[in-house]
Length: 249
Ligand code: SAM
Image 1: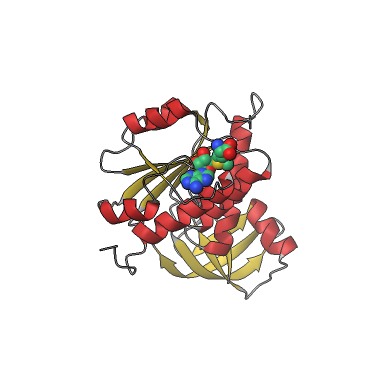
Image 2: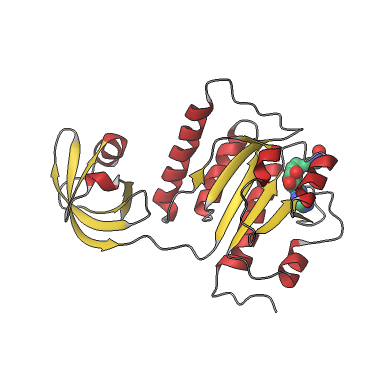
């Protein structure tokens, strides 16, 4: 069944009015009509199963047949990702969303090449949020919170004490993620840092370690930043999110 994002404001008891870009997608791209069953999800992650009752020129009226509250995520993964050039950042945003990341924090560090022109930050964050929302049409779940880009030092403010903290470094030779997971506590929140195409400056690794982050390796290959990010997210979700996989003994 097709999924559409809707503001909770547009939902009454058992009716919803889908308008704007989502209506355009339903009506003019997918050409859906009365009687078709759809799934709506709102900004809280609540989902509503329903049927298209009426198609007006600017909105579709959906009769809601079933409502499920947002699932509370047992494990909050926050990805702090250095800005990347071109479509690579889009790829990371999309795959991080599909993999269930809770929060994405783009940042600029010493060797970050990608830059957002002045006055375009809000527009770029809105674009990333649109990408994330589009990714949840396929994956289900809730799009991540995407914060405005920050400077590297600001990343260490307001991280909850009990959160796990990993900075992924290709220069790390002693501690592999597998060993970190085996020897670490079971987290309900984890912050991970992945650097830009040029990697982290040595003093940035030290600064992160001083803030309680552990330098961890993903293996001997020096991965592209976007590959490292997607791989790190998938492994961390596997290791800490999916309770059906018993924690490493
Ligand atoms: N500094 C390296 C260079 O210039 O060849 C490459 C940096 S790599 C392209 C970008 C980021 O991906 C790194 O900052 C790190 O966060 C992550 N990364 C890549 N390979 C990794 C590995 N084997 N283990 C941990 N992190 C890795």
